[in-house]
Length: 402
Image (tube, rainbow, N blue to C red):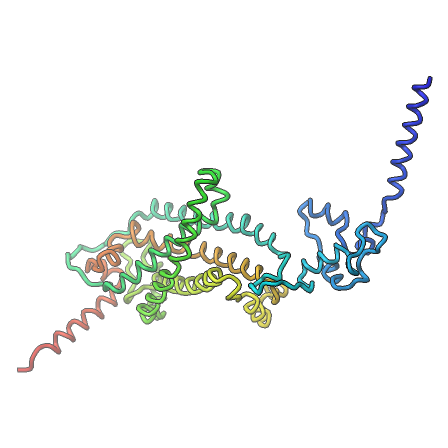
């Protein structure tokens, strides 16, 4: 009997405590009740991967009246609650004083870093990888259907100087450094996803360290090679009317015995050249920003110019941010650097194919500098004519008068 009575008392006591706890729990979880702090709905939304609006919190920074009361759980610290101070730090409105004058030292919380990380580990790796694999697949399919593009006419055995030694040096400096940069960049980008599970963290650590050193230093050779090819070949890559004829028949790549007229560079090669120039300059600019952290910010100013044109609004992007934390500038630079690199690599994969196994005689142009005369007549007929006219003119000038 006594045992049953004690059990009844314990049951009533526990039930009363639970009821009192439920009664003390506020049902109003609006931001006004929390002084702008995250609500239960916000927490649940984040757990479900949903976006949580930050405008209300951002507007509540710097105002002590919006902080939680002293009697509330958060309390106040110097007229501002912990949550209010955190919001001010998060949105960059806090008055932060630091002893060091290093760039970005006053940024204690970088709010948008997670978005950059999710983009880097998600869409960037996924679409970049698919793009490269897709190009490789298309080239394999093209080879199976078209085969190697052969020299249609009878070979003469005569050689024509196509590129001088300095031209070949500039090309291979640019191409070789690009290949090294591409490999080391992919190691850094795909290391966590693909290489660490394969080789382990310790083995990947030294590989990543070497890749970083190579990437940072070979970048200077790449930029020098870029300058060289621009100086040497810019005049030869100005579009002309013959390029339209070349494009109209696809350069003869898809059918035999079709050889549109072309000078030293045909329309396809001109597209490769201008892609190298535009993408090369862009990737060099973002690379310099990464080599010298926080010293060369460029995206806030670029976005301001773009906003003035109204293009982002027309594309449905709204207004691009014109004020950024130093770390955010670096994150934009890294993301743009990687995007341009993937586009660049996809284009160069096609160029490497046509310049090697895809076309007979093409590699000789950069291998030895001399090409088969029949190959030159089929792919660069106008250029051969120009070279012959110059040779006749020079031989005629050298003939002494009778």
